[in-house]
Image 1 (cartoon, each protein chain N blue to C red):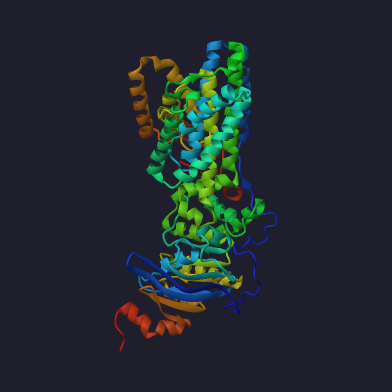
Image 2 (image 1 turned 180 degrees about the horizontal axis):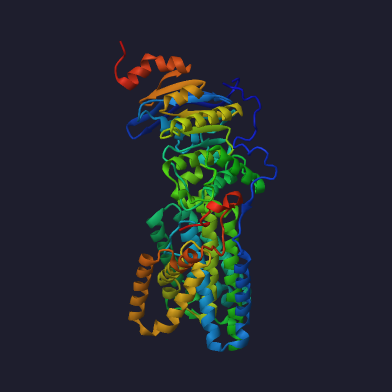
Length: 243
Length: 357
């Protein structure tokens, strides 16, 4: 956790008069998982879109591996190693699962060729738990498999930073356990991970640090246990400070 | 919790013990049969001028031009998600560029045909910077506007015959029969190049990126797909194909008038061909072109009733048979004769088929 792989400073974004992301600053090192919590509408997904490059910020900087990528678009950031999943899955419905993942392996981080991209795609299928469904049309998948497909595609881009947007929601308990293991495994392989999640115990089992957002502002950041017990977080969720 | 000492460099994690990697199949079972049939048909078509009468040669030239147009429109609408009703811009332009090169600049007509196609590709590339600012229905209409602009500009150029049109003289060095045969062969070559070229493009990495962009542009971009560049390539290829079709139309008809060279009817024909044949399939537009060509040949003399019947048939087909004739054949036979996708061979039994509905 020496130097940060991803460094986000004073990120700001408003839609019209509404300030959605307000002065958000955090760092993620390789081999580190940062959990992000916050009530609905807190600006978590918008913050992720600013990091992935899907949205351009109104202010602030995004630095990846020492290089300022604030002005690099989503395509360039993916190719430089930022992979992400979408909260609402966006499969290529008329293509097979394998082809969906191959798009990531072909165009993402490594822009891999020939057999190498097949191996990458196949590995992502197994890791995301889609074995046996590779040749099915993505449009025919149920929601849960669509979420798995999101993860598989992101992994196939060979990211250094992985942005996960609520991938545990809807999973059964054993499935959550497998997901936790996978995230820990990815962390061990040196990836930096930012994970937005409402399934708190999954977060607590994996994250090194926790960040809490509400109304676009960081209200607490640091040791997961301390953040969970902080007055600010309880206030944000319950609207009142516990006695 | 972290007993994970060995760091794998590859985040997607190659499966343990997979030395050679997964086996990926890109051709259908007995896929060679489609290619043998294709080769035989092309060979027979190449022999047509030796055996057929003059009238049939010209008719078949028209069929080949329809195939070029249909395949081109299908590339955009079926694989790139770019529905355009303005590709006649490049058909008309193709005719007029050929006219100018051959008649006004003494370029050998068949050389001029190749140049025409390439120049139309360049114009398509440049115009994409304008029309790609539009999306969906606005793109469809916007490209039509471009075609109308080209038409209006052409009408102002007196050396090209202005609004009342003109005829191509450069081919008059050939005996009429020789001319018909040579133009036929040129059309056959163009049709084969278009088919093989589009098939190759769709099987390439660009093809994969193109279909991903078609299904979800933002999703594709988040996976590193240069979606705009990919679409630009497809639009440029469409410009080349339509330019060739326009040049061939002039070489076959010998007359050209802006109002018909840039007519929106040409787009209606292309849409009809692709819908009847099967959107988003390789063989669909060829089948559709044959059907349309036959209907035109048999019933065009019936005037308005012919057009009404054509429209009714198109509506009926989209309601009853959304996949067109090619879609029906695929559903019945479970065979994709010209696959462009990827199948993971280790999971074959679960595979229902490769591509598209």
